[in-house]
Amino acid sequence: MNFNNQFTLSGRYQIIKPLGQGTSGSVFLARQQSLELDRAIKVIPKMNVPTLFAVSEAQILKSIQHPGIPTIYDFEEDESFYYLVEEYIEGESLEEFLLHQQSISRNLFFQFCDQLCGIFSYLHTLHPAPILYRDLKPEHIIVCGLQIKLIDFSVASFIGNSGNDVNSFGNVEFSAPELANGRPITPASDIYSIGKVLEFMTPYLDASTNRMIQPIIQKAIHADPKLRYQTVSELTEGLQKADKQKEGTNLRKTIAVIGSHSGCGSTHIAVSLVTQLNALGISSIYQEANWNDSLRKAIRQLKHAREHNGCYSYQCFKGYPKYDKGIEINMPDAQVVVRDYGLDYTFSSLAAADQILYICGGAVWHRDDAKPKDFLLQKFGDRLKIIANLCDRSSAAYFARKFSIPVYPYPYNTGIFRPDREKQDFVHWLSFEKGRNRLFLNIRNLISRLLHR
Image 1 (spheres, one colour):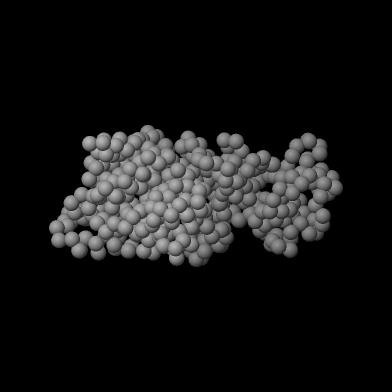
Image 2: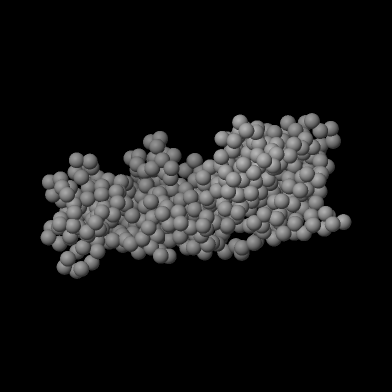
């Protein structure tokens, strides 16, 4: 059937235009002629969807009355299609909204969190039958000004008397692991998806807010459902506590060091940076965030290196190797923590950093490896610094033209545990770059005084 502006459903709803494609069918904008109001009509082909599946969405939505969920007005069918008539939501998906944002404020982030958790808390506590949504992703969250709404309930289901639902639906990127492996689906499965959506927003937040919410996100998306938040109320409480923390409460600054390829020198530069910062009087700690075990291998070569409470020290250097999750290490206070991710970085780990140093090889044969992924340049802006290791100025100029941002040519330097002028020049360059914070302004001023002695 041709659903154009000549088509009228039941003599009441005139099709105006298509709005998009849902999980189970197409969505159209329509006009309810008697009331002169816009409606959204989901058209579900009967040949694609079992009757029970289509009717289920209508039953679910009819039982819901919440400002964050579209109201259902009508459900009809003919020989070929089911028609679900819903409230028309005018806005854009969270995914589309973020595409044209350089950043989102801390207040807006927590406002979205509060609304999203409010919707799921409502669904999970409905009586007599709570509802699992099971298919949360940014495309299903519509931003309408400062209000968000959840759409597309075609995969949602009522929780049975057992409290579990064994059907597996959803999407790969944002759905809990148990949806894919056939294990029971519980409210903790939806909580996992909420955590993944929060993680999706982290690149648009400032580093201070990211550090506050990272423990919350990691608990929400734990692989073991028993170790996640068990109710949305618990997750909401954790987010509210983070929201109440004052900005700048955590004065520790973090630098994430990542690499373009194995052997590019991310560990070399991370260790050198910590050594030089400590030599300048800026208390700094190296933290190994990959499984290469490079720190222990390097420390073994040093006769006078020491280990105390899990921390390795040598002259101006202090650092921690990577430990298993079962080993708890209490790091001392420091002004700077340099985390060496190598190739093992994630969106959220970078989002929580004040600066990101992307290390690429200076050799011609590593130029293709050095192309940063689009999200590095697009999402992190002035926080991203590109370092061409073992590179002359002409090669650095090549990368600068390629990436359209300044690139630092890091010279050959074997003494990673020894402060020297070359490392000082590097720290000086970092502290003068755009997007610097108060700490790096202090470093800049300190270096300026040292250079003019």
